[in-house]
Amino acid sequence: MTESTKAHFALIVSGLLFGANYWIAKGLMPIYMQPMQIIFVRGALALVLFWFVSLFYKGTAIPERKDHLILALCGLTGIALNQALFFTGLSLTSPVDTALIHSGSPIIVLLFSVWIAGERTGRSKITGMVLGASGAVLLVVQGNFNSDGDNHMLGNALIFMNIISYSLYLVLIKPLMQKYSAITIMKWVFLYGFLFVFPFCIPSVATMKLETFTPFAWFSITYIVIGTTFITYLLTSYSLRTVSAGVAGYYIYMQPVIAALIGIILYNETLTMAKISASFMVFTGVFLVNRSVNIRKGA
Image (tube, rainbow, N blue to C red):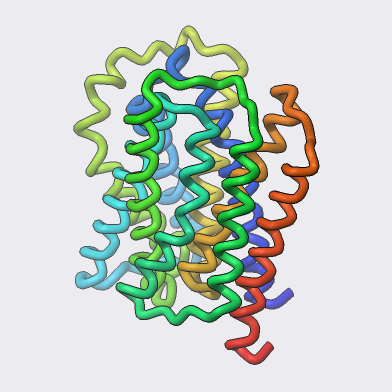
């Protein structure tokens, strides 16, 4: 298996885990946990995991002093702002709206990549992104999910700022992946991110009641910490050693597909031709983006 294949496989696994997160995280709020409580538990436990694993990983290195500013910016955009905006926005809106807005994230990643990293775009990549975005939007619009939000307008605005923050993070962290291992980067990014968000979590954490947790609540918070934090951030960072930030961001298009499948299986959604066609558009878009990358590499 080539490094490129491994990178794309890592992004597929990450997309699958993130796709389920819409429903799992929504199920925690507000009955069991508030957004800032989830952020605190997620950040603290993931930070411990990354630093613990780094003790046994031979590739761990101490970043140069000049790189700590970028690591701190990555912690701010990829951890603190990203998670605060996502969970707060999701608590106010629905998984449907969240998935729909996230389908525009790769476009923002591409814009940041062109502006900051000078990444070049080709006709095949642009066509793939437009096709994938159209499929993702069509897929989510076809849904008739049962999860409502309290303030869709505010929630959607926060989710939009969430994808801007995460898109910038993907572009900023890319150069660091050429110098350090994923474990090294993640342990420092999560340290800075947790320090940024910690003061805002204190009032909410003081009211957290773990005794009210059901088995579902324990499963959900474990999934969020292990699945959509430790594993997904590690896989995304690993993939950025090989693929561009734009390609990594494109796999966000998988998330509405996964969210829709969960709706079909668990929330009595019907599988229509429109949904099948939309899914086909998304994965055809993935093929076109990957094809443009392979052509430039001469593969």
